Image (cartoon, rainbow, N blue to C red; front, side, top):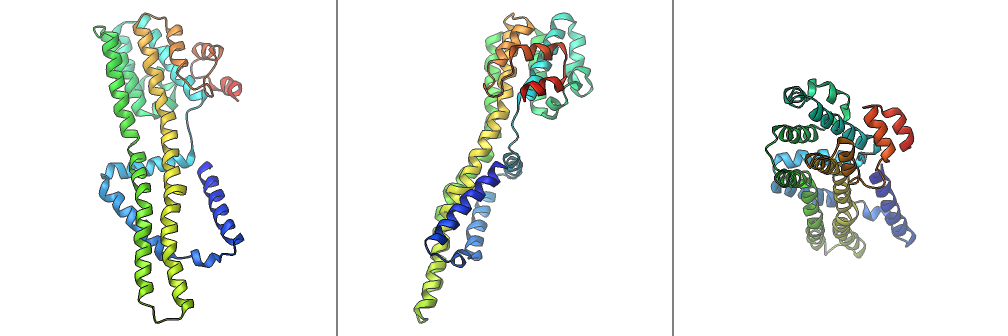
Length: 294
């Protein structure tokens, strides 16, 4: 919604200002200039990126337009799941806990947090490191280094659409010049025409330069920034898991370990200590907590 509103404001300001200056809106309607620029940009995007990145970029665009990022309820679910797992590790045998982390889809613990399970990458991350804790031989600093490396890899993969769109954004002004040059070549073939016709052709050619710059700085670039913002917020949950489990490995009680994870949450979305305590007493109960967050 934010992207659509922003684009409407940008287009409205640009077109409104152009008309107010006495410009004729019809001059900007040069569909073939946009075909040249858009087609060339999309073609170079396909050349530069593997199909996996192309598909991931489409997914990232949907996420950006929806603008959905984890809120208080999402963070409470992660903390609640971690608390329950840590309590199981402390109070039950290794075999009983492994039943949950080996088959999270069939685990009654994980089923209490369906929104967490929707993120298969996050669920796998949690299960892998709870399994390491169960083994008991891993040192905390070694696990922390491994977590950092995995989070870095996950972040790199999540940001591939951002890098690809930024590259396209940087190439659009040059592609606009290409479209403009083609328009000038067309105009040169009409030098024997009247000044009115020739002026229209030159104006149409210059639309290519305008379109390339406008699409770069007012459309593709900002969308890439929005994708980065959305994905950064989603990746914060991995840091919550990391800090919580590391504190637990260092001997903190489950309730105390949760505080290490809670403190990594942005102040805008961070639940209070009392809210986290209520969540741990009533796993997965979102109604009352959502009202508090609202």
